[in-house]
Image 1 (cartoon, rainbow, N blue to C red):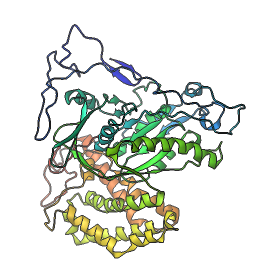
Image 2: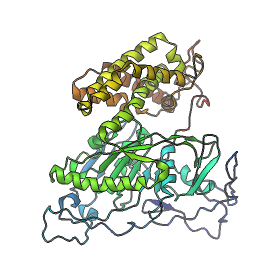
Image 3: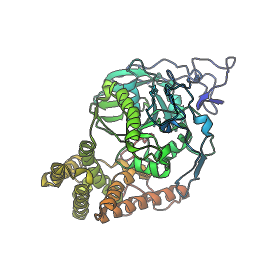
Image 4: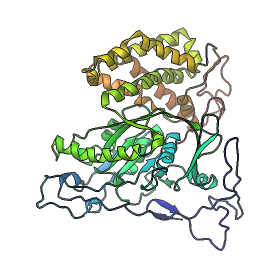
Length: 520
């Protein structure tokens, strides 16, 4: 099996296999046929499917940028050595930068002398890459597929199963309403596979100018570290991730040199998405909005702040235009303080409900009816509101601080917990998605919720004792579960007495009531 430009290409086996069937994976038979599953409201898939060998995509869609190697913003970045943080059970990812000559884009530019002014006119690429395979990533790919005159968005995934299912499920993404009735089906290209482990060599690729990231929290840093040779100051990274703080961690651990950093757009998706049955490419959708904020660029050592912001804004504005062309996404661009006003309420709720649920290993309803758990809830909420009130972004907007400080905001948080609890029944309601992640040994996104509030509190000099303790407790539970799964010790085969902890202690490997399908 050959790899061309990061794509997997199947060898020619015309004499050995039927194109209406599939040769994928070890032990596959020559007459393996796909079973077309149908459910209520979903049109039947193809009777069989054909997985044609993917062809290499052109290195650049449309004319190349009119960039100048002499202009600082588009000058090839210096060589660097990248070290990405890793868990104790994993190997470190260490990469060296590509040859700067390879990264240079040498095209004709209409300037008379090699100076930093005026800024060159650039031709921006419309090609979008989507890193991740969760419901948000698939919904965005589905929305962009309806936009004419731009190349199809390319999904980059970590699991080969998504490539196999692409053929089995008709090479399209189906979007259904909340009742399961089909709304639309749109074809997409076959996903590309990327390995996050350093032993798999990443073939040198052209610069990826537009990247949307919606992946598992634990895969964020490692995936972008693997794509580092394809990212420079021309790249715009759109983070459709839960919580906040990913940009700061990426700058600290992956893009630690300001001259090598991409441009950023932060997103908050209000679309309600979920899986539909066992299909990988079918999702249920309740319409919402995609709120975005373009982060100004101001840390380039070789450029003054105004020039850096102007050139960075060209790329982020182009990315926003591409997203706004997809009507299904319903994108709205917001200033920073309004973006925070829309983003923080959900973050505060999850930093309370999901965190306490993991710490106790219980349902949401058990938090509501546990007086000691509610004491922790009130202390964490009081501390978090105090941190939000101290943020410098709100100094010129006291009405926002007043909105979070009112007793009505606390009542809204409590009412939301009651709705998540399924009413007033102690045994009602569901489990946090974070519990499913911890049960599988994965790290929940606590660093982007409670951890974000801790970092902001350190910046403003406000106490964050409760949130800091919560971060350590959640990570302690995940670490214990991870070691339990690694050692496979048959301890605690049954919960002790009336213990309702649903995380560790020898619980069954899969619990339909607790576990959800975690896709990245």
